[in-house]
Image (cartoon, rainbow, N blue to C red; front, side, top):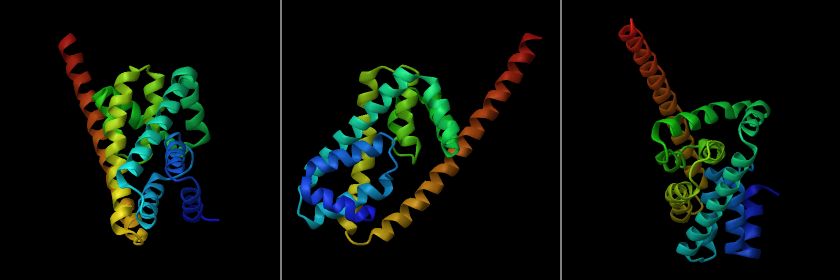
Length: 205
């Protein structure tokens, strides 16, 4: 059974609870791509005449629950968990580095911003736990970012309905653009630090 049929069957049988569970699992880093899952939820919400606000609310609560699970994993298991993920899943190294850099540069705002960035969206919760970020601030900024991301993707499915291939095509281009942007920002940040270090060394001479 493919993912689309599985989600449809789950929603038919369990309604809003299924949406909460699916999104919570995705935000808890299970291999369920939100770029596909959330538009599908929007499509089925439209097809089965579900209340859009209720669907969005269930998805936000699910996303927040999954994020809090990751936060406490990072808090309790610390850096060894991050190192293990980077070793077992080498493709996550860039996202983990980006998460650390974003938190260092933008502090709590990075939690909100990163929710709009593929892959980093979920890993940022673990990093926030590792650095022991204030849980209240984490929840507030996560809620804002999750609400925006889920609103965009679920609305896309709800409006475009059966045109899922269009949504996926747009999101692929968006993902590539964001990754490119992250590389530029990190490159600029590294260069800036090197120049600052050189200037500081000159001043101390």
